[in-house]
Amino acid sequence: MELDEFLDRAARVLERAEAWLPPAPEPVDWAATPAARWRPHPAGGGHLEAITRPDPVNLADLRGVDEAIARLTGNAEQFLAGAPANNALLWGARGTGKSSLIKGLLTAYRERGLRLVEVDKADLVHLPAIVEGLAAEPYRFIVFCDDLSFDADERGYKALKVALDGSLAAPPANVLIHATSNRRHLLPESMEENRQARMVDGEIHPAEATDEKIALSERFGLWVPFHPFSQEEYLTAVDHWLLHHGLEADADRHEEALRFALERGSRSGRVAAQFARDCAGRAAL
Image (cartoon, rainbow, N blue to C red; front, side, top):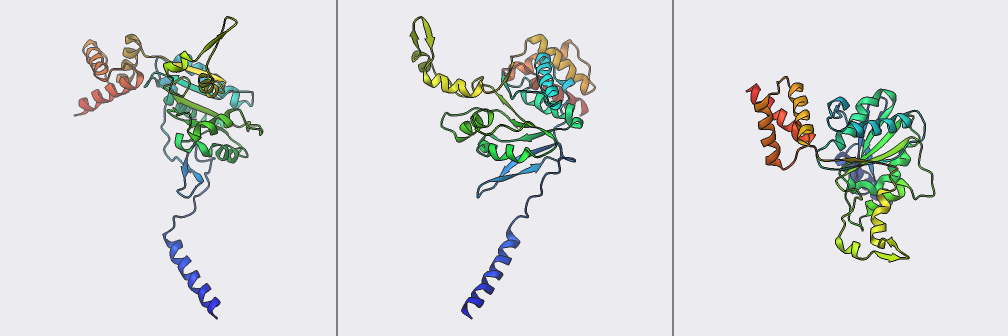
């Protein structure tokens, strides 16, 4: 009798607790959703959450990065055709279009079955589970890790190395990893590491710490560098974004755009878009 009473009370407690719990996450409908992000659970694990309004970046709006666009779209064409393709590391100057280029791939190839999955650096420990969950889907996925940089002892660093190339299990053919970073080797580098290099029979052998840092970035088969904009490239981007907002470029606006960039200490496509947005806003008032 005491057991029956205990079970009855336990059932009532569970009913009350369930009312406070969030609903179970719905699986992503990839036929209707081109992009998703990984949401970790406080108790461990996580799930993919559909992104209902992906940023509609158009590759034609990116200026000064024509070579990068050609290399990334060429790799994407191979990937979508079922041919061999590489994981990609986009590295270099801030604001030059690294993240926008990956978003633009989704806009360009969504109708051909490309899907994008965004994973935060802190959640890279879940990368093997994420990749395994995508393997059975009939779409082609780019797992997107934005603005990566690591300390050597971070767990996500090791997880990314294994996911790229280092596991006994073969990576699924329908998943690639694309990452962006301001650092070519994703890890901070110090002068002390250069001093630890040694010479053997006339050959320079880097220190083990340097080898460890290079080991991650070289697992990306495609390296795409992004360099700071020249003044001419910056003003070309300014002209494009002014036209995008229905404004005309002239000498006065060019001078204003250069001051705008000087205040931010950077000439880039991002700064050009911000300047044109500011001009359009002021013109609208």
